[in-house]
Length: 510
Ligand code: UN1
Image (cartoon, rainbow, N blue to C red; front, side, top):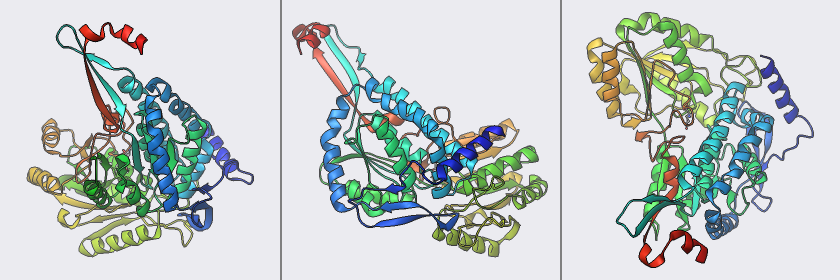
């Protein structure tokens, strides 16, 4: 309570006159400056952005690719120190990040705090992982007189392209992973959220990341396309839509020269299945968090609720009540549960989908907008809509809109097969106390992250590596033990010791 009060005061101070951070993303040499407006209220200008021009893209690619080998040669133990300093400073300078997450991305304080914490966790985790994996060569076996060793090295210049829904933690997660692995980075933040990214880069440079190694290039898809197309880019990390991921894969495939890997995290059509043995009150809590937290704007969010007939009447009744009590309004208001969605087009798409589903089904509950939800802000009333068939939901609807379908107890396998056929594979939730059912779902679920009797969002760095399969992405999971490998290459050195002698002496001679 008291600590939250203090945080809110800090944020207001950060927002006040004479604030110590420049709210401009992009360099002055860029194109014309455009205002960045708050999704909560377009009358609030958060700052300005100047889009990256072709000349600056070329310069970043040239400097980044030229300087990458130098960064690569800095021992991992040294390299990651800057990232650990960054982790500390993110917390010390939390007020401005929490302010920007609120104003630029429309986040409530709990959501902004969780994101800031995740960004810090990514810095610490990837720094530790880099010490482990990139720290020293590992000697392998082999015949006597031979020395085999494997070492992990950076790939060169990495392009990191990140989304607006986690403009700090996913942006930094990619960048920090690439840097820790010994790459230079060209980073393109989402066009909706360049300011928080600019502030993160400023802090990274102040923490000791060399400026020739990390380049921020605010802009739209064309900037991303220019980066991906360039053969000097030797790897791409992308989080965003499946359509954009496919475009990137095509561009990479059509390049001249060396192939470059793509690490992609895309969307999900995430279901939660509930049977009659689950405790309704707990299930309602888990559903509300999973579907409506962050205004449903997580790729992990619950998109389709599947309830066994026997559980439906009581559960849907309680759930409808909970949805109607959600407080939708300005994220500055401490009472707000759900802030705006990111932009007008997202709002229109949600209204459109809600209208379509309501026509085919039945509206069970809708949360009213509070008076703080000013006209012109992108506020969507969260909704619970019952529909007759799960085939009516065939794509990700990104926001606080939850369709629900009932099914019969004998349909468990059928339903699981139908879900698998959608080919998304990000998250799935299961609420049940039957061990047989748990076994069945564990066996049939084709998702990267399965959550049992708990909310299905909020994967914790290190403990719950996050990422999907199928239409939901490719590459190792972020926050997990394999992630950094994707940003590096393995080199093996095999040496005849009869000639080159004692390896320590050899080092001395060099
Ligand atoms: C995303 O929304 O793009 O587990 C992924 C979670 C978050 C999801 C981030 N780590 O809810």
